[in-house]
Image 1 (cartoon, helix red, strand yellow):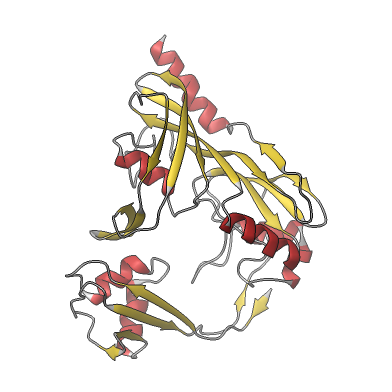
Image 2 (tube, rainbow, N blue to C red; image 1 turned 30 degrees about the vertical axis):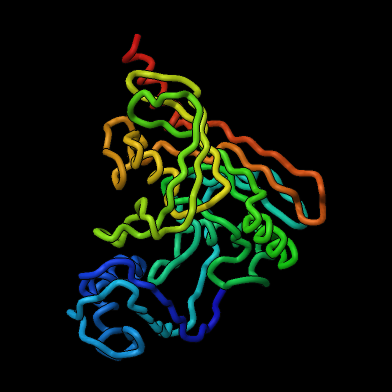
Length: 307
């Protein structure tokens, strides 16, 4: 699957003073290497408020940074035999259970071993519509998050699902294990999220961020941890991970916002519930997914420790 793409322009509004331009872009564009960023600045493809500046230029709050990226050539996405479970399929949609460790779609310099490669192998018809790098993709899960996703099989279905996500009518539920005894047992976390001013590769609770809400219910307490069902209608980047860390209950195994553990090598986060209306229907479909074996093993080991 190959397609020649034109230049891509990215715009960023700076939210705080002080960052060097090159350091800022390293956080704002994590898919670009530092050498790529330096080259873009040198060739004048990066402008601050419309002006070409040096990599060491200090940014100020409300500066507008524009980055123009011209692909070197056609991007080729090769179908790959990668195992994943198909939960449901129709002429319009596919519902899958994504395994942990699988990135959803390709990025710059990373065009293999993604869910898109696997989808194109199983469903070649996806190649004929939509974004060449994200055919059928209407939402995503982090690489190390497992669970349910819906994929569109045609443009009509894609637009319908995108609209449902925009209207926040899609219900997404996650099973989460956090450190600590979260009380009360039910509640909601409402906090705006945006790029962390101190580390642009992370997200954080920031007053200038985008509104986000996470509703939760504790399923059980186990060995100093809380097993939680969390539901979101806003799909901000790393939303659940940042929200629980922000209130002092980081997700077990989340090395970015929480802590590493010998119990598992990824965050305990699984998309177990998905409800939406299939395109052209007024009746919603509901899907549920059991915890994968690695997360079941964590709970079993914690149960043994508490015995």
